[in-house]
Length: 395
Image 1 (cartoon, rainbow, N blue to C red):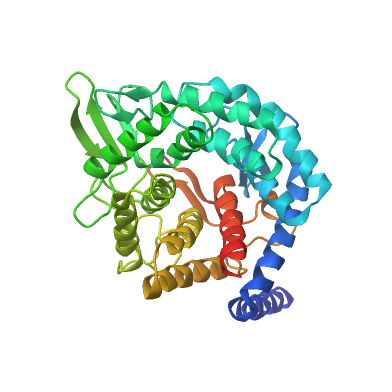
Image 2 (tube, one colour):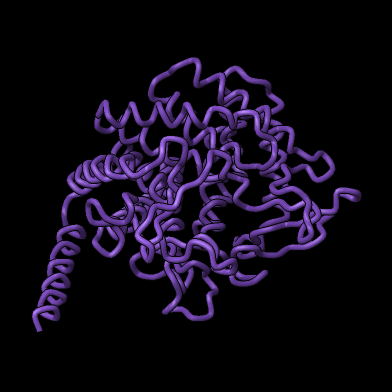
């Protein structure tokens, strides 16, 4: 009886907290979120081995799951630390961010995957924007050079994964995110070939990844010998013709970012159309946190994906900068709704819990039974980025 009473009490407290979160001014919510994030990441850093990066948390085993620096997510933790340092000026967080960059730097010349942008720009790029340390800029330039080696002129795209038993020459929608590294280097004293590669890749993605309704395939597999599309399919989504939620968010963010650098209105139009697909989809929940796939067969019981929500929020806040009137206000309003939902007890971790991660309920890959309904480092990164963008642009 006592245990039942405690459950009811905790439920009521959660409802009260959610009500406060949904009503409080955004300035206060963001301030509280960033303060919480700084304290939570101090807890996380105490659990983390000196040569590893945080990946997720195994709640069943009650243990932190880590990765080496080669893992595609290895740049998100230091990147989040740098954003939190910028928000708090906390020297403990800065020292931890510097330590993690030290172990990550060796990956700057890695050419084995397309993830150099995720790894090296979300980390060193964020650090350089805050510190202007020229050593960080050198690392970013080296990473761009490494990424450019994966460009395949025959398909006018960057090859995402190496050829294997499942794919000939796969290009995934996620790869749009790594173009920021190339564009930034090209615009900050680097070779214009990086811009040319990024533009070529974006144009090919727009042509081959997108359906008439502006949803995206996850994977387009190419035949390098002929330069033609071999197959269009999924790897992490529900089905080849479904709309995998995080993939849609990657595309929204990626084309918005490409407009930022190039001012090519075709990219702005693409981003606006992707936003239209997402925001008007009948399967987008009222709280704006997507199911892991918009076509998951078990909706409304399907898993939600906080990572897709966080990426959408950050992308919409930038897209609102390039649009006007009601459209711009809609993007800001939806992003605000996402941030309020993610800040509620339903998604935001209690301090000192969840392995030190900020948010719960993300989905890595359901088809591979990998990282399902767990915290993820990139969810935290884009959540903090969205909070930072809202505070910078709309407060």
